[in-house]
Length: 260
Ligand SMILES: CC(C)(COP(=O)(O)OP(=O)(O)OC[C@H]1O[C@@H](n2cnc3c(N)ncnc32)[C@H](O)[C@@H]1OP(=O)(O)O)[C@@H](O)C(=O)NCCC(=O)NCCS
View (tube, rainbow, N blue to C red):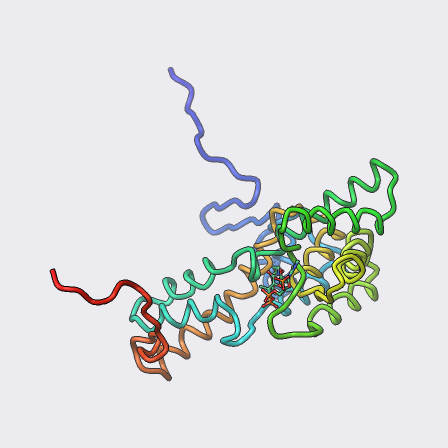
């Protein structure tokens, strides 16, 4: 007889009739005892966080919850919601908008920081030198350094709060040091003040907590989804359908009208 071939496998969770196991723990035991952030950590890292890590991850998730209509993701959700699609479609459009320049820069910044710290250990170079090299390389390649800059905030209130919390919880290590060295290098080498934003500080703290950079976008996806649900429903309930750019704000600069 042919051996049965198993096509699907997972180490994340297991379901049997009347039983749900998450990373080895029965979900009904977790419910009511662990916070949402601690369970996110469990799902991604395969174990529960320490008390300090749990507090930090909850704070990170809270920090990304919403940024009003001053965020491409909220605008995308509200445009799409106004066209009369189901909730999941409008929220998904906001999630899709989490790209390199908004929310999605955590991944890219964490990659730079994780490579930078490795390089510093391997080559026995100081973090300030690594920071200068990162800034120089981006400058020569005419690339933006992900995790820095903000169109509205001169000092991102979330950055200060999260980095102070990481310090208090003793989770502020080499990646956090490097990200602040980069902020200094930008000012010294480019002669510009480009602030460390919320994505950059989350990238640094989660790297210090041991998260591989590939989870970077996950922090914003999970956190911002809550705000996007609120925007989709508010748009539908309070506003007129068919949100579009007013005609008097659209400039047509194509060919002159002509006859066939
Ligand atoms: C977020 C962002 C789009 C805001 O941009 P902004 O404040 O509107 O600034 P501008 O796009 O007008 O750029 C102004 C100048 O600063 C530079 N600049 C802005 N952010 C920069 C960065 N992260 N790295 C290097 N240079 C940067 C621009 O190249 C530009 O230089 P120039 O005047 O010589 O052309 C921009 O800072 C950015 O792309 N950051 C990286 C992505 C990121 O971290 N996004 C998360 C935001 S929370």
